[in-house]
Image (cartoon, rainbow, N blue to C red; front, side, top):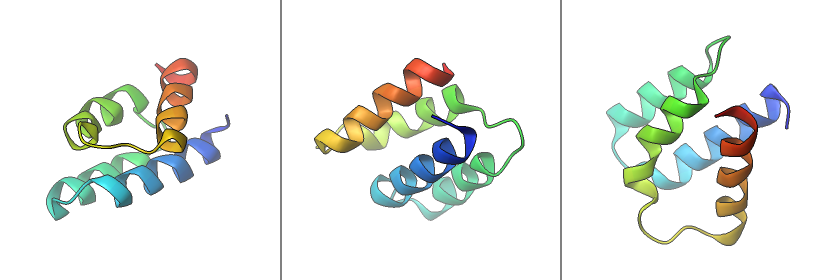
Length: 69
């Protein structure tokens, strides 16, 4: 997974699961940084992912954790 793919996946996850507009804006700003803090973004996403996550999104989250954390 490349950094560009990481950004696309994070944007999709954030837009799909984060309902708080302030948190969403902060996370999207982190995604745009040159040094994407993947571990921190995943940590901030976890409370929103505690519900039902699709199998495809679960695989993406595992790939992100494996490659960037």
